[in-house]
Structure formats: structure tokens, C-alpha cells
Amino acid sequence: MRIIIVGGGVVGYALAEHLLKEKHQLSMVELDPDLCVEISEKLDIKLVNGSGSSPSVMIEAGLPDADLVLAVTPNDEVNIVVCAMAAQYGVEKRIARLRNREFDEQNSAVKLHQMGITSVIHPEKVLVDHILQFVQTPHAVESANFEGGRILMRGYRVRENMEIAHKTPLQIRQEIEPHVVLFAAIVRAGSGMIPDGATEILPGDIVYSLFPMESLERFLQMVGVEHKKRRKIVITGGSYSTVELAHALEKTDNNVIYVDPNLEHANKIAPEFDNVQVLHGDCTQNDVLREINVDSASFFIAASNAADYNMLSSLLAKVEGAHEVIAISTERQHDKLFQSIGIDHVLNPRLTAAREILEVISRGQIGAVVKLSDVDIEAVRFTVDISSEVAGVPIKKLARRLKRGSIVGVIVRQDSMIIPGGETVIEAGDHVIMITRHKHLNSVTKLFRPKKDRRR
Image 1: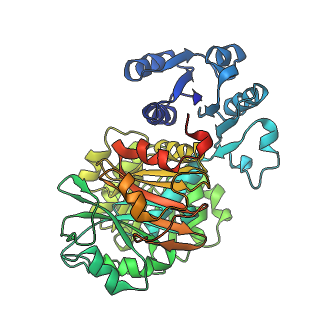
Image 2: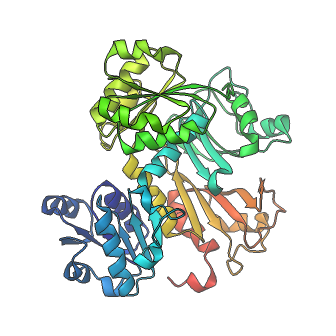
């Protein structure tokens, strides 16, 4: 496809990096000349220095011939104008990154499609959803949801006392029936493998599992996590994301304490909540953390706009005894460092937004693409078209077409999750989650591609 990305920040750069691997024809519009130079040194991409709200700049970027426009600047108004222009030029897909929740697609007072927008991404909502995944499954190393949260994928580091340690996937499946869990991948000593039924799961492994929501409680037992309905959660920050997170957590049964470092902001938002305790305080101060008894908190989540505040408060909360800490940061270069000194999760809101946008781009045939840890294994959701090569084909025949290192993980059919056997037939309309090495992704994708798309 011919794609224009408007905005070369973290979101735009992450999108360009991925889309280049998929061999799309890309151009990018970026207002900051210094950033243009930096991007041009790293990516082989057509760059146009200027504002996306300028018709001449967009035409120079190739708007008349574009198939897709991604408006991902930090400015909502610019993103709306970009999509409006793209609609006039007949661009089929026009995706806007919008921060203002007044533009929520379901509740918006204006018709976004009449403004030229075909899809909207709200970075704050995407970030909150990602945080809630970790709250839902404490101590997970990594997380992702499929099918609107009906199918969960979680990565856990195996400990000696876990139920799954020193057992094979086949043994575990027999023990936990009728619950459904697929062991999709194992990372052992930095190397990834796709296990078969006879692979022994060892302490120290990171095991990635796929399971339906109804198997959650049983799964948590398997990985040694107590399934509490009410946990103490402390959140801090004064950002839009922090407020959104507080509203989301208020809908749960958890005991939520919101510590706002800005007194004026704390007084302003406090009336919005009935079941969240809003306090004023600076969580980079040990006495504040002790006053709220952070040592009894299942989670401490720092979600301000200041990465330094988030990192320092999270580290101090961990030292003071918080069980699990999550920090928000837009800086990628220090993620591993901070995790190595005690922060359990460092989440980048721009990268989570970019991943969501990538799913929207290809929703229908190919959906969420989740890269596992730092290895070359990915979980990819496909929707089976009636004209694709896999429709009506038994798994055992498809297995002959797949390269080593690719398996059919699970099939989601209507409301059921199926772990397929050799005789299982893939049907049109199924959602299939494939586990594959990245180098095989293109060949796997071709098997699911509708006939009309195979020449692209």
C-alpha cells in the first residue's frame, strides 16, 4: 500500500519501522526539521518537512495516490484536518490519533466520518487498557488481549513451586480439563521455542499462554497467583491518563487510592469519584508512601506526564514494599535499566498506541500482532476469508504448508476457543491465532489472504 504518516514522533516512527518491514511504500510528513534529519538517517523513507495541515505539503507527500493516511501528530486539530483533506482526495483509510475523549467514536457529539475520519485511536484509552491487563493478572511478565478481551495471552516466569513446573503441556492439559489453556511459546535462556506436547516446562522459563476469560481463575492457580477480588491499588500523577485510569479502576472491586502531586488538580477531580480516595501528596517522598501504607499495595502505578517522577516514585514504592510497580515513560532507551533495578513494568503510551494503530490498519484479515519478549516469535490473529487457502482445510494438511516454527495456536469460533487437532477444519469466519517466527510471517499471511488480495 501507499501510506502517508503525518507526525514523526515516537508513534509515527514506530509505525514507519513496522510498515517498512511489510514492504509498504511510505512517506512521512514532519514539522520539526531536526527530527526529519534524525529520521532520514535511520529510515529509508520519503520525508517532507512541513505541517500536515498544509495542502501543498500533503500533495508533495503523495496524497493524490495514497491508499492510507495515518495522522498521528500530538495535535488533534491537525490530525482532523489531515483526514478531511485525505477524504477529499479519495483516500480509502484515514486514521486519526485523537487525545480529546469528546471525540470518542461511540459518544461523540459530532460525526467523525463526516469529518473524513474512518478510525480513531485514543492513546490514553489504549494505555489504560494495557495497565488493566496487568492488574487483572498480577506478576505477569507480558500481556496482550485478543477478541476484545475474551482471549488472553500472558507471559509468566516459571518458579519451582508453580503447578506447571517440570510438567509437559500435554500433562497439564489433562490435569486442568475442562479448562482450556494453550502453551504457545517458551523463552529459555534468551532463546524462544514453540513447545509441543512433550516439552518439559522448567523453572526460569518464561511461558506464554493463551486462554479464554473463563479459564482465568484456573490459570492464575497454575502460575501461583492468588485470585483476589479486592486488591489495594495506589496510582499517582496528574495527567489525563491518570484520571482515566482512576475512572476505569473505580468500576472494579479494588480499593483505589489516587495520590495527586498537584493540590489544585486534586481538589478539582476529587468530586468526580465516589469510590476512589483522592489525596494530595508527592510520591517521591518516603513519608508520603508510608502514610498511605504503600507496603500493603498490590500495585503502585505512576502515570504522570513526567517520566522522572514516575520512575523515582515507582522505585521508592518498591523499596517501601509495594508488591508490583508500573511506571509510564515515553523514553525507550532506559526501559531495561529501570526494569533491572526493580520496576516491574515500564509502559510507553506512544508504542502501545502504535500497536493499536497497526491492528486497525489491517483489521479484518490480519489483526493483533504481538511480539513475545525479545525473541523472534509472534502471536498473530487472522480472520479466515471464505476465499483464502486455509478455509475448509484440516489442520494436518495446513501443517504441511507451514514452515518449521509456525503452528496454529487456537481457533476462536463464535464464542468458543478451540485448541485444534490434526482433524480440526478451519472454517470461514474463524479467528485463528498463529504462533510463528517473524521471518515466516509473510508466508503465513499469504495462506490467509483472500484471493482478491494475493497479487498485492
